[in-house]
Image (cartoon, rainbow, N blue to C red; front, side, top):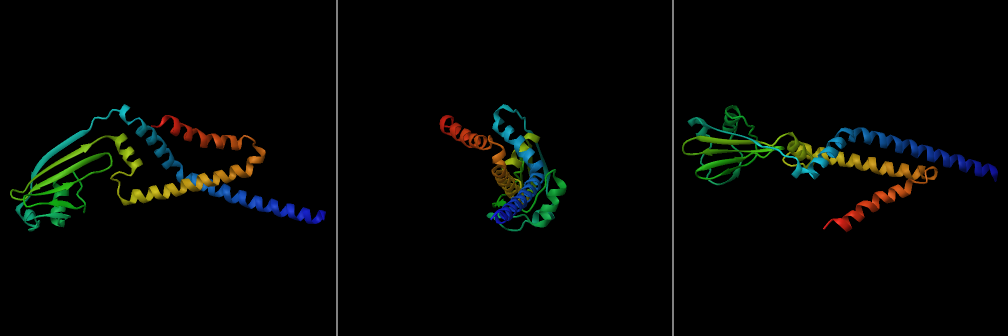
Length: 213
């Protein structure tokens, strides 16, 4: 009987040791993956929460250029709808203007082609007069704080950054759940574990119910 109990205890200790090693490994790897991004999202969470208190003066630059007739002709006869510019026009604009024109759809009309150029931390636009070839542009830069705030929100950041946020969120989930299971496994030796966990749950719920209207 004692031998059987001893074997069961050894098996239980081995299982506990296995899961502790696994959880510690998942926890530190997810922490390493999340480290820099978590710092970024933590700091930008503070700046977003106090956005009205952080003053920023947008820097606006604008100008004009004249599109050569051969490039203007490449626009073709399209008079309405949304579609990217021809490659010839895009290449010329990228060389002539301090802006980067990608393959985003432009707004076409009989008189004008308008390209909106929103980006993280700023904005911009280009307008092409189809009769004269006159090109007007404007570029707005709202500074580094606005840039990092837009990264936090995934605003005008492109598909690659949105995928990164998804991967980061999964890594944070692994980090949090592995930490919760580690708390559970060490709770016997640390009596204050569950009161602190309960406080972490109750505090935001109370604030949301009482102070958020």
